[in-house]
Length: 204
Image (cartoon, rainbow, N blue to C red):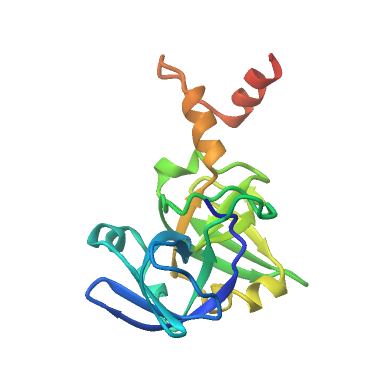
């Protein structure tokens, strides 16, 4: 389990034959789980100041591999007793999102991200979303995506500073949104909305 708070930006040294080798200040052990751009991967080799994780062909089909260059987001798995910040992140990428627009908004920047239609139902206004492993708050839900408002500190210290219109990103929807939606999914074919979920929850 992760929190979506990036420990550091790791340097990509190589990506060969399904093995991604990184250099970072953090020192993992062989067998550790570590999120790289939001995807939970296993450390299979440690040498000096570098470590290597393995990506299966299936993972590479799902992930935005074009972002696994130069620098990547890195977060070790939580340990029992760690301070809990961000939100609960599993490190299981649901799908790829696409940066549709980037607009400066005074002391912040609005990013509109689109995603496959079947995942829009898991996006909640003011809920949590993970973009390439970064825990963020959804400001607005759109028909085919959502809007994020990112402060300068986050942009300067994450991959957001190199995102452009058309950039693909790893996206993990909120775990609780997925669970609640499926728990209350009607069996009569009626469309379930978050307003209806709120009404159901208010009865208890």
